[in-house]
Length: 171
Image 1 (cartoon, helix red, strand yellow):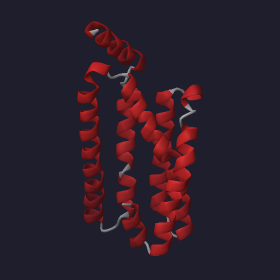
Image 2 (spheres, rainbow, N blue to C red):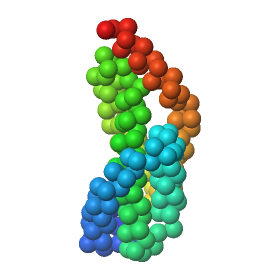
Image 3 (cartoon, rainbow, N blue to C red):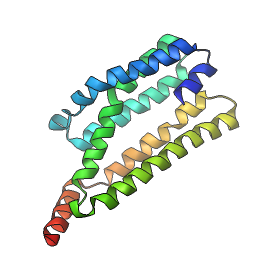
Image 4 (cartoon, one colour):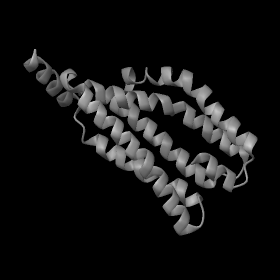
């Protein structure tokens, strides 16, 4: 979606490709660094931080006009992308009983595929309704806000306790 939007506002192909590569190169070390955040903030608060950064990226995308803006936003994505995904899987993983991990991670995988459809669909729908991708970028904030709200309902300690109890009952 980023390249579609970037091309629409006139950013050249070289800058689009370069910025996407930058995201990957920044993402590698920051995935490792982001993995250390839970020691200080906890898993949930680290994920909230990532959702906040993604929200800022989407809002910043609305105001993006130049290739430099695109590069800066790509760098910001690199800061949180890998780490937030790993922390989300980690949080989910500690609350999954080992004896049911295939079922739970199957559901997780299907959910991520569904998200890969719904996000671009909202982006396209808003773009079609408004005639510009600027509002499409901002519309993605809905997912970050809803994700944060859902996360507030997650009781990490209780989830871990239940997963351990299920595992203990089976062995």
